[in-house]
Amino acid sequence: MFKKKLFLLILVVFFMACDKNDDQPQNTPVSIDFSHSFNQQAIDSSSFNALDYTNGFGTILSLTRLRYLISQISFTNQQGIKTLVKDYQLVDLSQDNSLAINDILLPPGAYNLKMRFGFTEAANTSSIYPDLNAASWNVPDMLGGGYHYMQLEGRWLDPGDDPDEPFLYAYHTISAVQNPGPDNTREDTSIEIDLGEITVTQGATQINVTMDINQWFENPNLWDLNTLNGMLMGNYTAQKMMQENGQTVFSLETNTGD
Amino acid sequence: MFKKIPLVFCLLCITLSCGEDDNQNQGYSPTPVNIAVPAIFSQLLPAPEIPANNQLTQEGVALGRALFYEKNLSADNSLSCAGCHKPNQGFSDQRRYSIGIDGIAGFRNSMPLVNIAWNTNNKFNWDGSADSLEEQVLEPVVNEIEMHNTWPNVEQTLQSDPNYLTKFEQAFGTTTISQDLIAKALAQFIRTLVSGNARFDNYLLGQATLTPLEQQGLAVFLDENRGDCFHCHGSPSNPLWTDNDFHNNGLDENFTDLGLGDITGDPAQFGLFKSPSLRNLAYTAPYMHDGRFQTLDQVIDHYSEGLIFSPTIDPLMKTVAQGGVQLTPQDKAALKAFLLSLSDPSLANNPAYQNPN
Image (cartoon, rainbow over all chains, first blue to last red; front, side, top):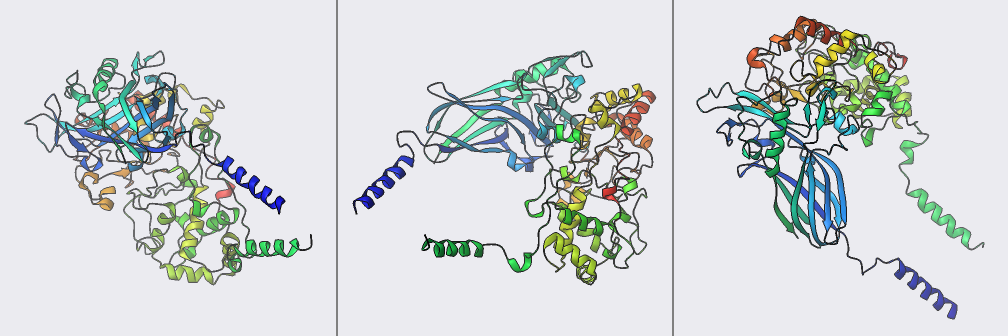
């Protein structure tokens, strides 16, 4: 009888030892959603092709495609410990499953959320990401190599132009390159996005990061699509202007906890 | 010790009774097989996407190969899949429009069937009308201007062939032949059709050289101010040589064929067609979804000075106002030479792709 009691006691102790440590905060699910707007107007793939938007320059435009790369998505807690939750994400408005990162687990608390538009110079090596290669996201080596940061495409016209024959634009951002060709030199024009403090609460926490597309066209450089509408990848000056305009594109829209 | 034996026996019985349906699967042990991934694909691309419910097996692929060349899939037993997707023509058809069993021509050029396992967006056909390869292979069998058959008739025909009963038993563990299993077997075989042994592939692997003209052509291809082909047609980093996406590449002002828009009903997608791979252009003429261009020179001329504006034209056709990118004769010759270096002469004679029947 005594032996049985002793055995049961050992079992209880064993199972208790296997229990989670109650002193440690439990991880809770966190998701990051990427949303898009044009001057407060919400944009999704159903908004494509409509000449419904007017940029800061006064140009009327539509979107037909928006893809961009976000990398180094990290949360830094108040003790300064940084958790990298994803190396990169190719956001594509036509692919719903690319518009969120759902598999994040973090202890509740306050964090600083940072990410990067594009790749750092160190990460932007030609051909090393198979999924991005299959997505034709590459930049030819003669244009500096590596990968695109963004492909924003659509049609545009000035007020008074024939709406049935709009012009075309391809606003592609890459690492700025000088001397396109075999002897090019490349300059990192990726953008660190510091989204500030967010709070992860027990239960599901949803973070909404929004891109105001119009910022690409107006702040601080008013963008004239009459002159800068295509073949921008090898245009060093245009890439630098895009980098400047990209500083205010992203913001934290809301931070909701359940 | 003896007392424990009945307990172990009972546990074993319970465990065994949880197994799958033994009646259907008795003796069913197909051998898993992997796609032969070319070296350059292994370096640059994700692993091929195979549906969980249709993993490749030796027996399934062998059955699919037999079915691919099986003329009894058509109503009058005269036309197989290979009749319009010929190995020596890049698994395409050099006729502008393939001819169905009733002598009626289709209205699109036959799409090449290679490297389908890397079609990661899961949209098949020129117009994206099929969401999976298993779905895609169903349609030609019952299409009135192609094989013009019915699935019950196909199932009955194959069911009466003892050779196929054995093959289905080996591949799927059943002798009950269904259109679902036929589609699965065909899809398995088609996923094994891989083309990755062009001279340019070997150049990337350091095992071949390009001529100076081909190198110039590659530069034209990758130059945003000249060819700008890479945005839709891959690059040395994307050896599929397609983005597997849909574009209006400035062929027509008005559309007689709405392409993707015909499937989605979205006017913004009228006239959009899937970018075909640039592999095997030496064997896959004529070109474009409707086979309107007989030669590669005509294709290059189109992008150089033949672009036509329409409301859904792709913004990447940015020089449409000038009619195209205005290549010089030298650029055109170089681009053509480069494009032909993407052709894979080993595809046509690969013994694994030949008619086994």
